[in-house]
Figure (spheres, rainbow, N blue to C red):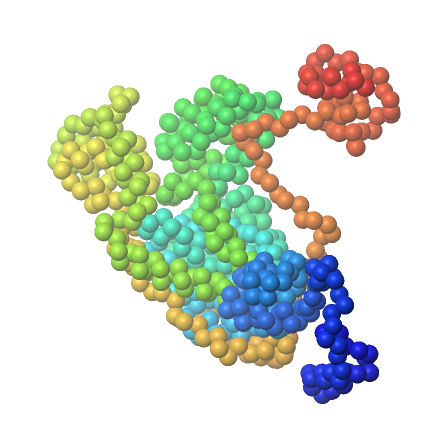
Length: 564
């Protein structure tokens, strides 16, 4: 429809009605014009259309907006249009991301009121800027103290939301070796003060409970855990140690299959359960290179080797569980801090209820993961022979003609695997089979169905969020103290976002160094020297061909030099 003249339009400012006085029912545009026509949509209109979906599902993606809009209106949106529409919808729901920090005091108070024994603390700077947040649900604390193994995995991950920051976490294993979140914290960075504050709050919820902490070797983390809990209960992750060991071996020109052999021997050293076996594998490593053996002895084996660690580590040598938590909470790491807290509540509620339902359907005294480990040990015991020395004592000989002493009451094997893992080792499986007993009765009680029922006996109470106040106006902040039974009211004051500075350019990806592949040597296209390329070459051009017989260059470079 073509309108003749702008004067023929009668537009009412107080309404959205447009009256057309005269129009010509004759189309003057061509088919190509129709094809090239692209209607324009304002971000506010698009955001209003998808506001309800973003409210119901904070992890709603921009590509989902583009897809659904095209299906509904046959109009294709770019990804940036979808992203802007989502950001506008989020701003309509909770206001700008900078204002969502005003909701932290209200959310902490609501968690404390809804979930008994919950610890939710937050701090701010002198300029009323957000500084730290610590949350541990009462149901999680109760489940951990009642049945989880006294083993916590501590790690941190980056937040990719509007103001970035870091998410610190403490996670544990349930009776079936699955993830059980205990506490988390949102801080500005992984510095000494933030890790120390997190460790102190963690000690408050653990009280006098003896716990082993599995951590990486970050200096700030190690310092905080040592100051608060001591160094004896701090077990180091083996992955970080292997990375440093791999770099040291490369500096000693140990590469290829020889390097892979040294890494396997290092694993044997870490998993060795007796000092005698530890010394045996250390001798193998020293035979390959003396400096490697010296490096292991100087790397505090008391913190990572099974043979010397003073507490029961349950054979958990890596912080894989903490990395599972980082992946589990990945969708919420891109949201503002209030949606992060709300999303964590929703995920934890769903997980606790699902686990409580699953354990009711278990047909065996143990969970599926523990059942797989038991079957593996039974398969490894094939070919073993046993000889009874008493009613509950056996001498078991393996395929290598090594004899181990096994006692069924109490649970003991001279290889120490049964005691360290809580699951009968292959020698114990052969002895149990010979005694005609059930292998499930020999599993540690912390790995059984009864313990799983105790862990998930208390699930999360519903947290009402129907009366969320507006984030634009300041909220009367109620600051929790270390005493969960008392709170102190403060003046009505806005809580501002932390000061963050996003570095310019595309964020660099931090990749873990490969331990199986050797890096290819880079040769310059100008001077043919290794270690740099043509863009960073500082040699004058042209240069005479260097003659170095000890440097082996690829054939392709020699051909390129001849062509030049």
